[in-house]
Length: 104
Image 1 (cartoon, rainbow, N blue to C red):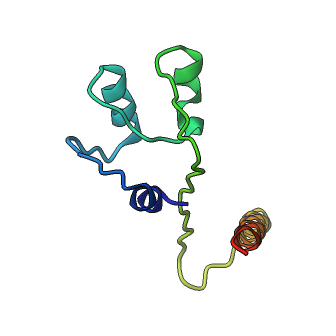
Image 2 (cartoon, rainbow, N blue to C red):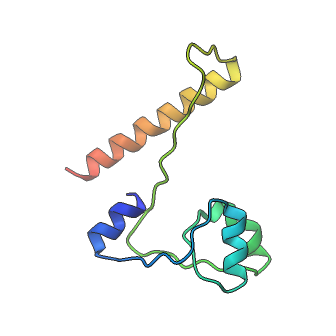
């Protein structure tokens, strides 16, 4: 579920008072006490281990960040890039089938 879906389904309204286009700036603003943010634990791992930030799990929600791959038209990928793309496609297909099965 995306964050927008979660907010719609739960009726949560967010009052955005600051907007950053850079994750580093978001982390620093939170560290300085200027708000909260929803970020991937992966990008926060070092800050959490250092005790600079803490996480609060969102109960009942597994957020998904949509991912897109862009490339030049008619691009021929090397073997490693092709294997990576195939892995992503397999994972996406498995996620889709799990989501479909859960909705039945």
